Image 1: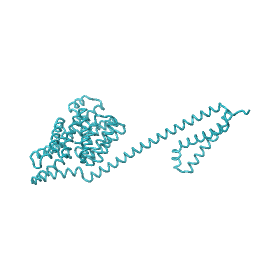
Image 2: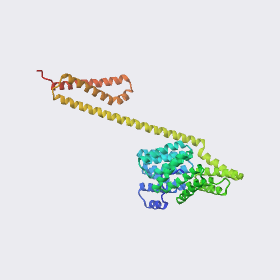
Image 3: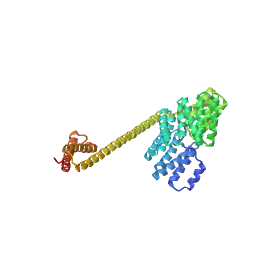
Image 4: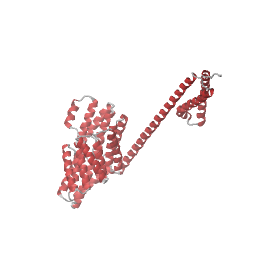
Length: 430
């Protein structure tokens, strides 16, 4: 179960607060919380509330409120199988958090994006975004969402059949969830461990974990989690067993009632295989048809192509952001160097004033005068170079002429300054 980056809120609590709250910013928060409470049981209701939160946030020009609304909209779209639109919503959410420079929100968006890639079976992309989310959460010491990222990493490694990594991340996530008493994450961890032990061919241990996770999911009305746990139990029984059919049908019913296409696909594939082994052809055909329809809805070539295009566009955008940061860093470094040069020139000018009060050799005055002239000229050349290059379109002749003009202006000034210093610092001959 790919864990979302929030905990369940009490429906009644948020309904009461929403009814009495008049301030728009608070209403957006309560609408988002209420919609998340319905997410895994009544996604249609959650979508309506999420859209209402987003519309109100857009009306009040609240970027954070819009990001909260997009969170629920993307979650519902992902759960109900519209992965392309879900990815669009989460990329949009990421942009809003980036504008706010809200690091924890950026991490949450990365996690959301990873969840969609995981459902599209693009696990390498999922890992890429999950590690980015985990890094931010650790840097920000965000104990609330860190269990989520560990569990999702464990879930992704389990799907890749990298069992050792899956166990490490899942166990770590479970321990972190226990520390903060996050029952939502604890239920997901137990379910993930059940999947892991199923692959390790330890059915009795897996069964205990599935049953424990069902207890958490039932308390939270989390039908998405129940779909996976029920189907996991069905797979533990021998093919053809009545108990296997019973739990598979529970999974299918929860998926159908809630509109979870991913879960519907998994359950229908299992049931088609079950009835085929039983040689009940009509039932096998029905479930096979459901599986084909669900698979086409999730993985048809056009959707995959669009997701790839969207991913490519986002990769380019991230590269542009990284390049902009690199340029900004270089510019800051250059600015500091220019400041340092300017400071040195000021110090040198003060030194000139100092030697003008003392008796110095003409050769010394001339030497420091030339050094000063060269420094000032080079400093001005460095400072104006970008503007000159832009004005002249990098034409060497025009750039040279402009720099010659600068030199022509500086030389008379340097001559007067040198003459002034010499007059103040001539050594009397004995």
